[in-house]
Length: 365
Image 1: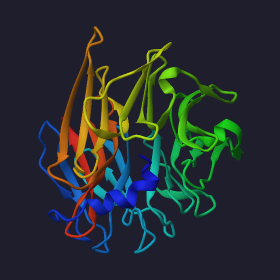
Image 2: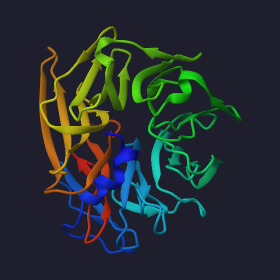
Image 3: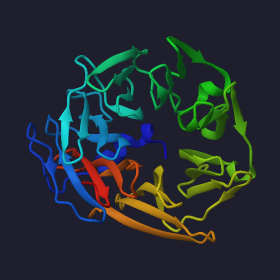
């Protein structure tokens, strides 16, 4: 499932349940408890808009950002980016630069004073320097931005290739100069980096969308080949170490979930026991993996899926429903530094449209 292509349909299916937030009021905060729970929700006007948080980054235990938009998947309405920030005790709204439009689609946080985010089709790259947000660069409008990976204020990658429609391509800031990357590196959708000279990414070859895993090792991009990576459409990738890389997606032309693991030398398919679409991936802080996941229609239920890996390599799967019943979407998930707790973000049904949603697992205060 390609998120850009199917977002409107998915959100339309996430119709009315119970509206929890009042437009213009403070973001609702839920009481803390150890398991997965909804900790914050808010609806940005207009009332009928589909609100969603698409990205969450946590540069520190007491600092996190959740970013998205008030009118995701539509050209109507006010169509503004939105941001919420965690200060160690509460989530609160933060205003992004005036004039920026479109929902934030991806973010990267190399440090608490160095946060980067891109809007989906309006061409804005915005930067937080520890005190204020500003527009760092404006790309052409109407072209998809799908990812951003930053290492410092002078080393930033922006990706914009969906494989399904026109994207802005790949751009690399090195020093003070932006370079439009061509060739295999120009086909990247999103990336996960171990360092500035070791980046793993999802790319495309020919006319096939998101069908390749590519790697940058300081001097160019190369395709990664393995029988386990063939005939697939990839959704997400996370590189945890040189001997621990995970890729999710679907077998080409099907809705069958696909999960593949690299142990440093060999890519191995891992059987997924659930019928769902695997979303963002992150470490569980204990050698395993957490995934944001969405059940396929007509169920339209949202989950946090856990894959525990024992010291002897035994895999144990569990899943935890984020919001009871049908509707909503989970877009991103991240480990809170120095803990085994997590943040997840997405949308939940409102009276009409949907509200932004933030979930947590484990102690967060």
